[in-house]
Image (tube, rainbow, N blue to C red; front, side, top):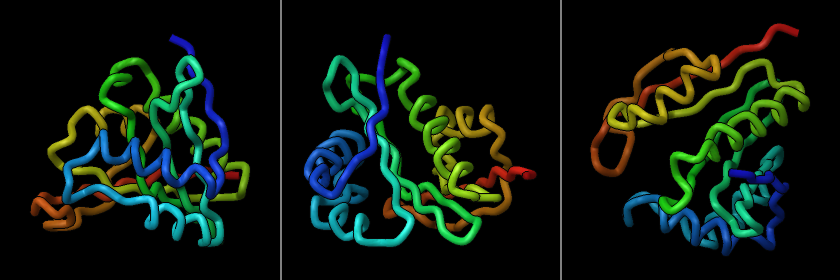
Length: 149
């Protein structure tokens, strides 16, 4: 399996919305307008994973003032279990590190054990819980990775 990560631009908002729709329940989906608006924020960076020149997933992060957070990440179900999520996460980690982030945060559903395993394997640690964070009422684990420069 080979995949490349390309930097997304505002013109890719429709592609991101389509990938998000394939990856999340209706209550959790973000539409094209939401992605377009996120691109207007300072420090937002997005990487799209391409598998055989087809969009397979993406990660959107925001990196400001020494801190970064994952806004959303998804892999199209047709491309899961092929290492794409790990590649996206590693791209994001390198990108925010290169931009001077000392801490990198994310939220993950307590029910999403495979995502948790990925994040823990990449050096993230649990730093809190957000009760009933998701639209379905599930809790989120707040995870953080720190770097020493």
